[in-house]
Length: 199
Image 1 (cartoon, rainbow, N blue to C red):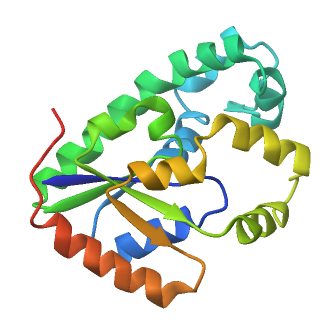
Image 2 (image 1 turned 45 degrees about the vertical axis):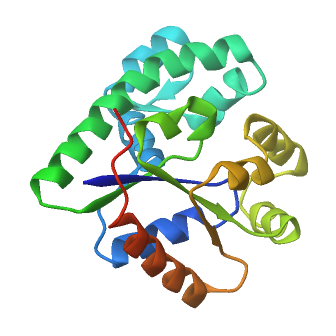
C-alpha cells in the first residue's frame, strides 16, 4: 500500500481535497479530526495537568489552550509531547486497517507535515495550494479569525512556495472542484506505479 501525505498551509483547500480523495474511494486519515477526538478523550487529564484551567466539562477548551501555547515555544513543545504519541497510535491503527482492507493507496491529511518531518513517514507528498489573495480571503472569512491570528498561524507554517518545491504532487484549488477531481485522478494513477519509500 502506498501512503500519500496530504498537506498545505491554512486556507489552501486541503480539507476539500481530502474529501475528494475519500470520494474517489481512498481511505483518508484526518489528523485534525483525531486531535478533536483526543481533546474530548484521553488527552484531557494530561493537558489539564500540564496547563491547568484549559479544560472544562471533560474536554479541552481550545481557546483557553491556544491562549497558553500560541507564541510560546516551550509550552507548544510540552503540548506536542502529550499529543503526538496519542496521535501516533491512531495513525498506526488507520494504516493497519487500510492495509487489511486491501487499499492500494491511503492518504494521511496532516497540516504540519513538513514542520514535523512527517514527509519521512509517507511515500509521497501532495501539497494543496491557491493564490495568496484567495488564501487570505478564505481564512479571514472564518469565525474568530483576525489578521494577527492569521499571521501567528502562518509564522508556524513552512511557506507555500517551499512546500510546493518539496512536493511530489501539487493540487491547485484556485479554479473550483472539477480541476481538483481531475488532478486527484492523475495522482492516483501515478501513485499506483510508485515504489514505497517509507521505512
